[in-house]
Structure formats: structure tokens, C-alpha cells
Image (spheres, rainbow, N blue to C red):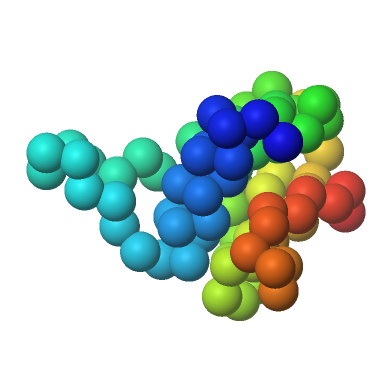
Length: 85
């Protein structure tokens, strides 16, 4: 995994865990936008996440504008896992 992709995975894992990132008091990026990016990085079709349901800690169901649904979660190793629902 490239350094840039690992960095993005760490940022997404941090956001999914409910922690806020603070970069010079910039507002945190909404979760739907982050999930859209994670799904796109996996090469999966989505377009844009239009709704998000939280199933548990670090576990979300993302519904896309094209009708696809994905579970996005952080596994025990701290890796972001995306699976089609």
C-alpha cells in the first residue's frame, strides 16, 4: 500500500472512530464525504454517498446515489474494509 493511501486510510479510520481531526481549527469533513472517497479508492461504483447508517463503533452502511450499498468498517487490525451489501 502506498504511503499516501496509508495516510488516507488512517484519516478515515480516525474519522470513523468518532475522533475529530483538527487542522488549524478547520471543520471535520462530513462522514458521507469520507465514505464516498473510501469507496472510490476501493474501485467500487457509487458516485456519491447519499445516506449513512451507523451500525456500531467504526461500522457504517453507506447508500450510494447509484443504488449500491456498502458496509464500511475498521477491522481488528485497524484496516478499513468495504463490502457490498
